[in-house]
Amino acid sequence: MRQAYGDTVAGTVVTDLGFASAKNDAALHDQQIVNATMPRNPEAMKRRLSDPVHRRLHQRRAQTEARIGIFKANFLGDHLPTKDFASQQRYIAWAALAHNLWVLARLDTAEAAIADAG
Image (cartoon, rainbow, N blue to C red; front, top):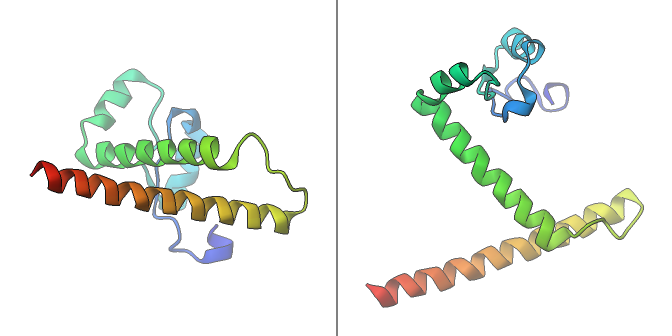
């Protein structure tokens, strides 16, 4: 990513415990990237989660993973129905547009429900 977008592209990395390893920790340290990887060790995990910044980063990661799951399950399906890369990009772009319109429509409905209740 840094080769393609420059040195400032990644300042913090937030992952679940599946990416936790001494090698990844060392690589992030060498690159001077803030390491918010969830550790596998339960005691280390408890210490990390006591840090409000770390906890906030992981709450945001969980929200993002849930949104990706909704996008994949409800808008992409099991597989991309096209074979060439340009067609796949176009298919995903249309799915992203449909998803974003769906989110916007739900926001309007939620705001109306709140206004009616208040």
